Structure formats: structure tokens, C-alpha cells
Image (cartoon, rainbow, N blue to C red; front, side, top):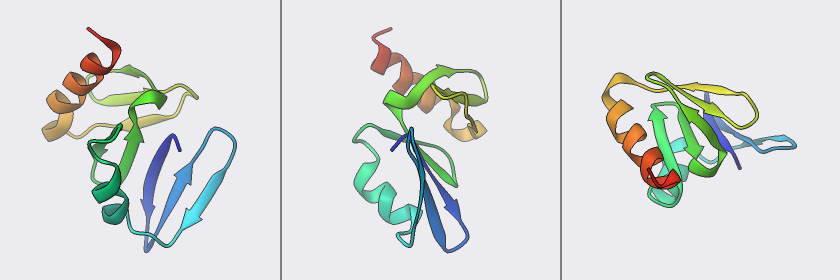
Length: 88
């Protein structure tokens, strides 16, 4: 799973090959995944650190080119986590 997004009452899991819809809430996924290789850059998405190619000031660019916005309140935390992940 590269990233997960909330979609109404469902969530959508994005993998390298497919998209899977789930009835599990984003908050349930967050409880299990945050701190285990996943970040929450914005209220409606969880992103796997390994899927991130680049972090700009307000966007996570994934290896497949997908861009996920980063909220202002999460920017520093996201940038710090990515730098630690890549060893900078």
C-alpha cells in the first residue's frame, strides 16, 4: 500500500498495481499504521514513507508521480520524518 485516502464512509487503498476500496475507516488504519512507516500529511490521507520520492514545502510526491498535499500544521513533522527516513 502506497497511500490510503478517505472517501466518504469508505477508504481507498492505493497500491502500485491497483486501487482497493475498504469499509475500514481512515482513523482505524491510522491507529495501526501511524508510527509504523506511515505519515498523515493531511486529514484525509495516510502515506507510506517508502512510497515518497520527494517532499516539497506543501506536497509529498510519490514514486508513481501522485502528489499529496501537506497541511501547514504537519509540514515540519513530515519534512523531519522524511529526512530521518532517507538519512539526512
